[in-house]
Image 1 (tube, rainbow, N blue to C red):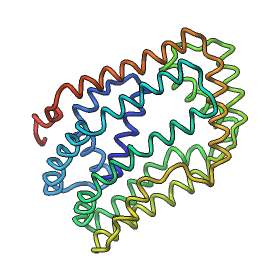
Image 2: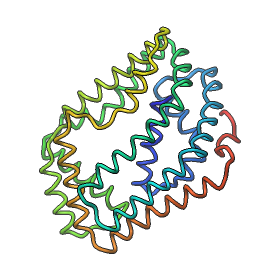
Image 3: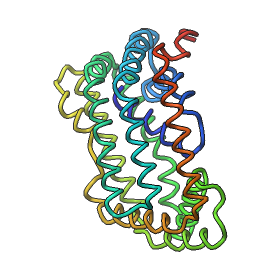
Image 4: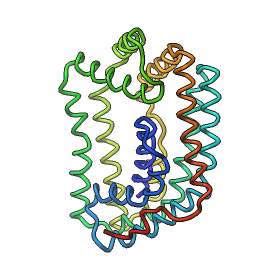
Length: 285
């Protein structure tokens, strides 16, 4: 369950890149989370009935206690983008996200443990297979040549960036491609890291299902920050982010700020309504 909250935050992050509505995601967050949990555990009917009302309670808690902090955070991001990013801004960004994860983990840990205690051996096997399915894209990347991986990464970076900035010109695209080519290639190492983290999660679920106390290890697993073993790669991506920021025109920078404002407006509309997510009205399908 905690993993799915982090996955929901990832979904929100992806929506930022895809121009999807935060309001839509929030109104349907209970359904989104149930889908994601079911993807990993093949939920029984009893488990669905157990989880849905608890998720709705946590969504209400999140609206009442966390969304305002997200708005404040995004206002700060706007100011930093407006002033042009500097070397202090990116550590600030990552450090600012950690409390959000920590608050969610503390809020959800009891219900997560209750759910894990209901997981059967068949569902643990299902979880293992589902996690490995999640790795398929990374397995494909490892099999690519370096040139193919760079081309793919360049495409992803440019397409993601243009969701914020609008169209980049030819010179900007070429300079970004050159920067991506200089990044350390950690694809195989990252796949090994993912699998290690996934096995830790399986062990935590299995332990909880067997009656072990995994509260603190689960909290630590959920809130772990950027892994030290990839410090060089993260430093290179941070440097690339600052270099890309310098490439932006005034119009592109303003579009980034305006896009963030749309999210702030969406979040403020969520705060104005204290009702449960709309998908709850439809009930279980």
